[in-house]
Length: 165
Ligand SMILES: Nc1ncnc2c1ncn2[C@@H]1O[C@H](COP(=O)(O)OP(=O)(O)O)[C@@H](O)[C@H]1O
Ligand SMILES: O=C(O)C1=C[C@@H](OP(=O)(O)O)[C@@H](O)[C@H](O)C1
Ligand SMILES: [Mg+2]
Image (cartoon, rainbow, N blue to C red):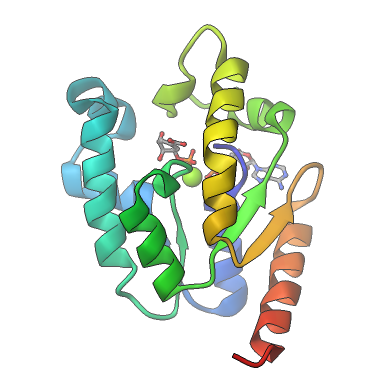
């Protein structure tokens, strides 16, 4: 959360002249409710069910940039879909930057707690190995302008396409 997936994904899609899709937005459209409402009424488990259905569908599409929610890697089915169908980019960010970037946004239910720093630390501990297990490209985004992050993604994409498969 706050790594910049939604922001950088949108700009990257513009740069690549491809379609941008944010799975969280699709989940909201499909359910006719926002993410805090889904967490409130259906719990995190309900949100993860909806997320899995949407990821399974969206990863069938071609030529698009897909920004996911940060918890997408929790389900092995999601990791498999992402790995099989695309180049997966892990945007790494310090907890300090995550806190700064998410502070003004009430839209992340997992961070609406007395100690969001502790929550982020635990999530990182749990998720970092999962992100690494499915990432083709890993990029640090701390104190880096979104444009600079995009240039780095493009550079690494070019390198990947040069490698013999
Ligand atoms: N590289 C960056 N530098 C500065 N601010 C950023 C950067 N990436 C994202 N942001 C800002 O941080 C906030 C959260 O970004 P967002 O794209 O929603 O993250 P995510 O989708 O990974 O949770 C937004 O206000 C966005 O403008
Ligand atoms: O990390 C998570 O578990 C979540 C991240 C959110 O998306 P962003 O990573 O875009 O904030 C959103 O999917 C939901 O609040 C759960
Ligand atoms: Mg997002």
